[in-house]
Length: 87
Image (tube, rainbow, N blue to C red; front, side, top):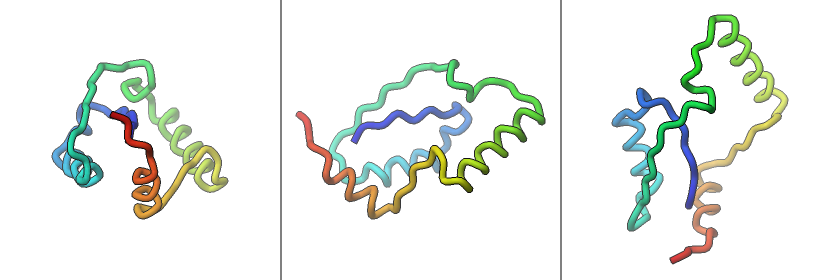
């Protein structure tokens, strides 16, 4: 499995680490690459109006099933089990 997760440093909590460990429990090794990124908007200061507008757009997207991807835990397990293993 390969993915990119972009989060704020403040979100690197023990709970986040426990969830990652649970997700990767069947792997024998994990590669972690860390880089500082500031161009994707998580660190951009926004006012109350901008924040509310962003939330409202996100809610509307969810309601319209636009730009969303969802799957159950079982579907996710099936997807990652079907991935080719490269060595």
